[in-house]
Length: 234
View 1 (spheres, rainbow, N blue to C red):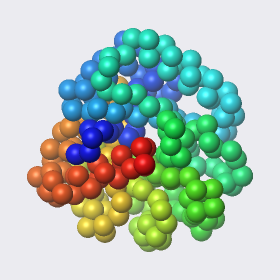
View 2 (cartoon, helix red, strand yellow; view 1 turned 90 degrees about the vertical axis):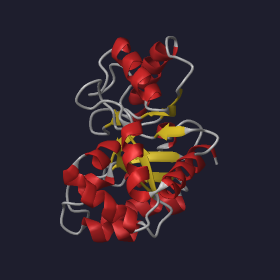
View 3 (cartoon, rainbow, N blue to C red; view 1 turned 90 degrees about the horizontal axis):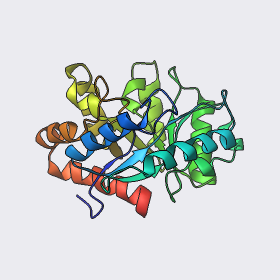
View 4 (cartoon, rainbow, N blue to C red; view 1 turned 30 degrees about the vertical axis):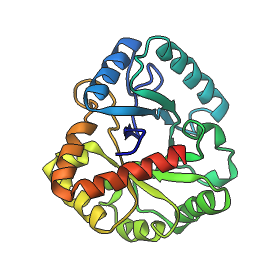
């Protein structure tokens, strides 16, 4: 574990901004659960859908939500916000800097739920190489069922791109095989809870880490922690 402690790289804890926490009370309960799971840095990544609003409008709503939560939040975990950006065509042409996490150049991007075309890979390549964003692809395990995406993921792995895996994928028997395949491929992987509420999609990163340590070893877990910390803090 790094000096920054456990980082939850993906969550929907900001109140009233997307399909995650509906209010401050729920957000505070989720943060308490996250803290109990051992999380020291909580990344807040509300959904950004470019076909619903522009970046400026989204950022204003995000800032308002964050300020409301920040007035009542506990000291731990530390909060940083960004966005879970739904991929959109030619996103390379947009200024995405305001959607980066904290003061980093990290962008959390949700790829489309379909077979990925070469043009999509080209956009990811441009963002990471030409624009020098630190691209993180959200919950990559969810896209492996689409034809050709395993090969496309291998192509993307040649870029300075990191793959985020959801905690629940470690905890459900039906998805553990996919997680094992990703880890055996020696990709750069980081973890996130993708928590949306206190019940069906609650903060569960500590539970996933317990399983991951038993299955893949403390060395793999430390590598994932170091990767997450380097993305955010250099």
